[in-house]
Length: 439
Ligand code: ZN
Image 1 (spheres, rainbow, N blue to C red):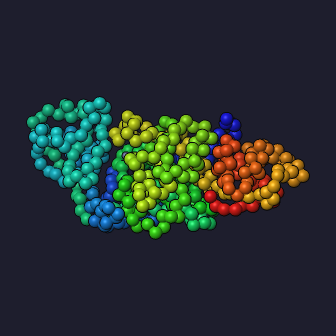
Image 2 (cartoon, rainbow, N blue to C red):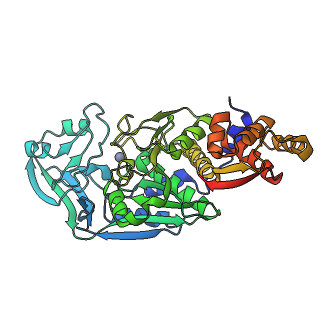
């Protein structure tokens, strides 16, 4: 049962930047696993936070993988033999298969067909395709356009290069009072796709800005990574410190207006219970899904040898919404209200993780007398500010046995975490409890 003040508390958590504006700024840039677009995108993030930019040389061995050659592209067209441009990378960067090698020549329609990707079921949309490790080239275009191209041959030009260079990723760390860390990641390798994953980049930037101005119990590490190879490279380079990661979350597809979906960590962890708790009390429709070894970078963080407590928060689930990996995942598809709401849920979650302490009663026998300590009066005052109820305080004092964290208590009492936190403050002020351990 939701109380109105709880929902409005969530509404008060607003990002410090206009998320949709930031997405609009990043949208036209051609991103890939490597190359100038990724650097340009990270430079935009670095306008807001003190981002460390890491370059990992092409060919570097990382776990079972190698960092790929760097891909850059300046232009690409399909033209009629009399010079009329039909498909131009300058119009939309989805038009070129990611990692296309350079090509210049005349190809028969039949030859070209082997390099053309369309969506016959969505004939007006351009699909998003990559050929990272394929040594190939290709074009993506609306099926309706391709069906209208009936010449025997076309002039094809792709002005690109695949050459030794480096792969770029961004990292921002806000230290906490303890060694424990929260890991938040998103991917930065998709070209003009707004929900997948510019929504993640913008929301993560806003979360990082907020954490940077707060002192917390936990450290917060934000990683802006090229998908898969970026996560693998980060794990390979940071193997010695991964045991500090107490909670982790991959952010993606958070700007569409659909319900939230949370994919649990492989091992089952506090983060899973925390996200489910926040979503439930945010009054947002949502679904919790079990771990599987497909999807985003949670599959790397939850891989054998690491098995970190990392889940994935999204609204639309990859592969299941019609705009996914098409030109319809555009600036109209992501909604400012949905972005702001996703931010508020995540900000609430980070505050929960930071405040999730365990307490023990100073005198752990029986129920303490509240009236003598002025606690009934204190509760009445707090209620006006949306704080703890008498029942919340009774739950807290009952479960403050050194074995239940505040999150355990909030779940058991089925009330928002913030109310158990408020109850804890009252009890601390009355010297009824002491903190015992970090959760
Ligand atoms: Zn994607």
